[in-house]
Image (cartoon, rainbow, N blue to C red):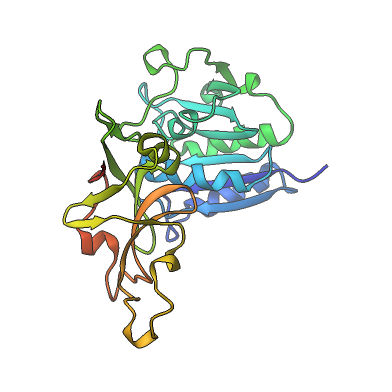
Length: 285
C-alpha cells in the first residue's frame, strides 16, 4: 500500500516555527508518511489567494491525497472547521470560503463539521486539530468519526460559506463580462476570475476587447511566447516588457508582462495599476 500524502498550504511564511511544527506533529503521529509543501507564502488571511492556489495544485496529486489548508483557521462561531471529500481528495480547512471555489465546479462527495475540539486544548488548530484529522484519514479512518455530516450545502443552513467575487458578472445582453483580479503571482502577473470555458460560452466566437484601467487587449494568447514575432530580427522585436493577455495554465484570463521582473522592469500589477478585486472587463462585438 503506497504511503499517504499530506499537503500543506498556509500563510505561515518561512521565518517562524509554525510550518515546521506542523510537519513535526504529523511525523509524531505517523512516521511513514509523505508531506508536501504547496505554499507557505499565501498573503496573510487571503482566502481567495489560498483558494486559487489549492484549486490549481491539488489536481496534480494522486487521489486520496489529504490537503491541510491553514488560512484564517481560528475556531469561532462564524468560522467552523470542516473536512471535505471532493474529487477523490480530502481537504481540511476552516469554513471561511476557501473550499467554495472547488465546490462551485465539483460537487463534494462528503462534508463534515469537525467536532473533536472538546478532546483537544489548543490555540493553534492547524497543529492540533487539522493534524489529528489528517492523520486519522491517512490511517484509513472515516470522516464520520471526526465530524458531523453536513447535508445542506447552503451557508445559511450551516453549509459551505461562499466567497464573494469569484464569478464574473455578465450583462443581460451577453455583450459584456466584468471580472475581478483574484490573484497576483510571483512574477506580478494578474489573474482574473474569467475562465476560458465561460469566455467561450458567452463570446460564441465574437470579436472582443479586454480592458483593465488604461490597458487594452484585443488578442488573448495561449502561450507567453505567442505574443512575440520571432520572424522579426531580435534587435527590432518588442519582447521584454511586452504587455499581453493570456489564458494561463489553469484556464484563467491573465494579464502579464513578457519576462517581467517586479523588482526591476516592473510587472503587470505595478505597470497596469491593478490590485486584488480590481475589475477586468471584456466587451464582445
